[in-house]
Image (cartoon, rainbow, N blue to C red; front, side, top):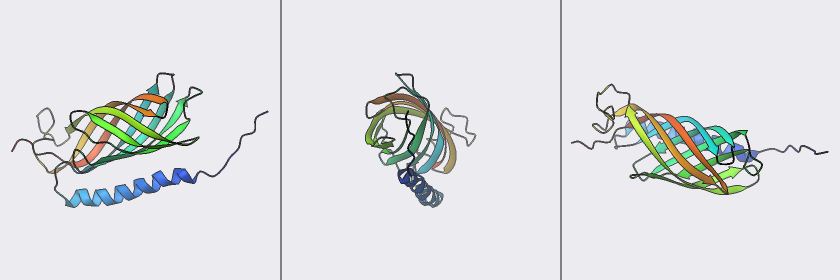
Amino acid sequence: MSVLRTRPRPVLLAPIALAAWLLCTLSVRSARASDDGQGLGFGPVLAFSADDSLYVGWELAATRDLLVRGSLGGAYSIVRHAGDPALFHYVAWEPWGYVGGTLGLAVTDPKPRVMYGLWEALGHSLSGNDSLSGGLFDSSELQWVFSIAIGWRGVGATQTFYITPKLWRMHGWRINS
């Protein structure tokens, strides 16, 4: 007979507190600043592993420029292989150049683990511009942006592929001046 042990999980409160702080700090900064690329995005995460585990979750991301970008999120298993964590919360640095990278800390059910990965994303401004990017690269004005990212990440020995659509409130990048 197995006994189910319950214990308080104060570690789960840390990501929620950090998310609230990021949301307040960066949304005020995004509304006043006019630096190219600054913004805040939020969206769901759908991930699956080679071991047939399936996760759903959320991600809050903030960007200041291409190299200063952070994410905070959580993923919860729907279907889980015995060796994969039931859930994990993470905080990560995710710079982007031609391809994005991930390096961070994930708190899983047994213990904290390093998180690493690669990703790529495509964003489109919802401002109504007819160009391919919707004006995202034509102006540094504050705008609503929809993005979709696909990637691979590892949390300890668990490797997942994921897709993350996000809605952003951000300044565009003025590339065509």
